[in-house]
Image (cartoon, one colour):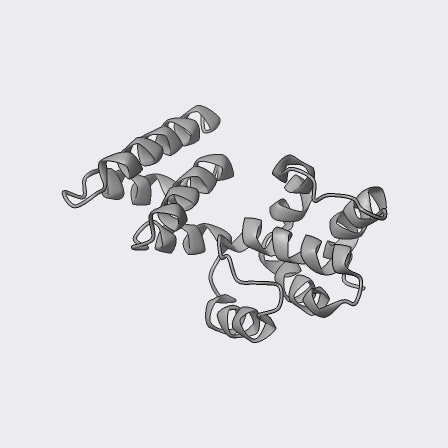
Length: 153
């Protein structure tokens, strides 16, 4: 088992019980922080016969990648990974700022604000200066930029 799976396995051990609900995103922070290296293993776990394992893997993938593919869409996940595996999570999120789907671009802005990664600052500033930006999205982008500037002090 890859060492980056320890956070996922710890999570699985802690929350795996009959009838348990998926925990809130904060419980998956360690998994999300692993980022790219954990993605292939999570994709492999999507077809696990234990529904808790497959749903937890899908949830973690959604948080890491900002993609909302079904856990049953393993081929979509594999194709997405093959196309994007050479980019960082921050770059995935920066790309998603320009997504026509509001929820995707909003979540990308929120996640970028949480990364603490200085590379996101220029992309967020550029998005703020975009004359075509949705006014509601502008609020999220502005807040993300403030969060990044606070974390980089």
